[in-house]
Length: 235
Image 1 (cartoon, one colour):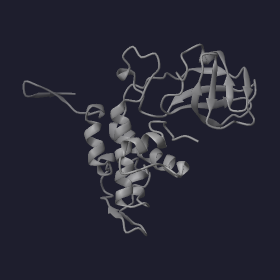
Image 2 (tube, rainbow, N blue to C red):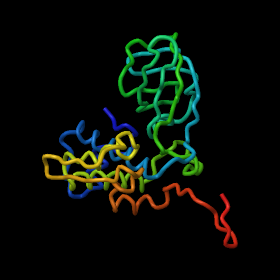
Image 3 (spheres, helix red, strand yellow):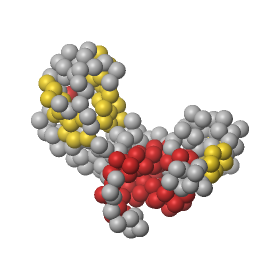
Image 4 (cartoon, one colour):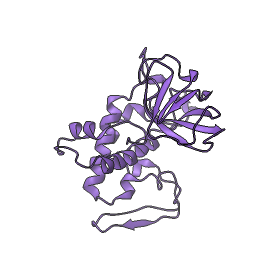
């Protein structure tokens, strides 16, 4: 198991949120962390991602371990930072995709779960589906990483969602943020938590992001606008 973007493990969450003594249900914790990761991504916006989108062919497969020269001899876990997914686009297993959770320096990666149909006819493309790691955050690092502020922001977002109600999909789920439920006006839950929004407006993640998380993310938010020069606006 793993979170969708691997920004934070349940153990790391428990270490950051001092109100939590430990995690007993890792699967549930990973689900909540995954929602928080997506909200953080939506709040930060698009930046140049670290990974390009290389393509390759499967040369060998053993369970969840895939071998291909595309992965090269990079440092261990080079391909396992953030939400990098292997998408099979041709051959056996076409249409399947899996998160990469580990890699070694011998042309191999480990997927979060095996693709049973995968074989040497399979062709894939690697796609980074997360905002982090970002190209501009890497300063000579041999392995891309998730900034500590982002980890803390995700933890604070999980804690915020928990405080607002254990069923609070408004805080944990990314559908309202990504406008997939644009007609949604309000929701209420059995825990007593409820929220409302103006369906006439496209409201971004700022409506749902935890104030504590926003403080950690100040240097990572992509702001679009005009550059003002001598009182005149330039796009």
